[in-house]
Image 1: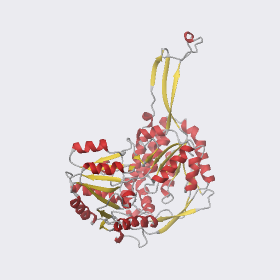
Image 2 (image 1 turned 60 degrees about the horizontal axis):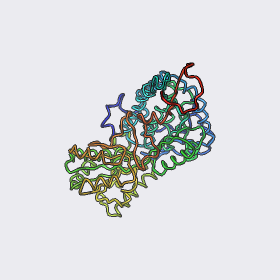
Image 3 (image 1 turned 135 degrees about the vertical axis):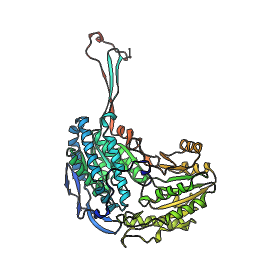
Length: 521
């Protein structure tokens, strides 16, 4: 990810080689249940396309309720043995998975590019960030340590433990088919849970690839399962009595639905929703640095990131200079097939491409100035690809749909305000609270902003980095439903539950009847 790798070390392994890239696996893409591929019983399939060509490269099987039940049954059957597997053994499997992933991540990156459309370097960055969570989960023996108090009361000891939940469900979006599932399943598995993953039907192959990698790493059959599918599969996971928790990333309306449906069914739910991420540029900021960041974070992965910058707030008269610098940089970008060295690839589907373009139309009709028009892009890619180039709208106002809605495309809107207070009010009055950034050379202003802003993730002269795996990922307000963020120690707590044990070994001096409330004496 362009807007997050700036804080990460260079990824291990080789860079993806475009000469080695092939289309997404042709033919049938099914499920993975109890350690094997299966077509299941569902009669419905959906096409998988290469967004850079528009060509259908495969058909993904959509799960029936029976298919979901089979996957959950496999996870439930595998849970007792995996729960009781030693922490050392679990860690060894995690380490092996991490090593295999590191060796082969160019292969996985190529698969992402073929089905999602993001350029190869961006896809490799996605895999590397997912790998960081696997590395974090390798330390699970330390993270699961409980507490112990000797002689809490006379000859009474108390200790705490954290234990796994059982079979857990993960429902992941199309924009990060590897990184987002890996926010959850390495931690869930390391903690002793079993997993049923429901990936996006738009780019499903990576999920099966990772399932096969887990098997090679030595993970017992049934601990990691994959069901492809649509709302039928989602609804069954949300209500299945054997699913203990649900982790979800997607749009806010669906996140709210997942949270309400899952919690009504008695499940623990973390549902990460949409975003409208602001980037404030104060008058004292380095405008060259700010312009670079705006372009990287606004147009990377064609804007299909929940951490993308979509609202650029120019404070105190810097708007003209900042817009000019962004235009200059945008002119150097190449939009095209992700295997050909382009800077930005296509959008994931034709329907989504047209929806994003309609927001540009609406913004222009509402009075915004279209400074850079991606609707007219000439891509280096197939004539039937889902193309929309980088787009810059200036003089956007808060009531325009291009500002109020999460567009999820390469559209950067510039709003102009006079003061820091006005800029802060824009962010805090927005219903989303996922991420934000401020660019300034004033340490006092930055410190004030990080304290006053009502969002979950903040960048200071960094365009909203995805936090490292040992910190949590998640927003506030309509960007998160539930109490727990992803990964970090919050992830460990989400996938475990606490138990406190109070112990007194047989001691005749404590015999006799006493119906009073026990005291710590």
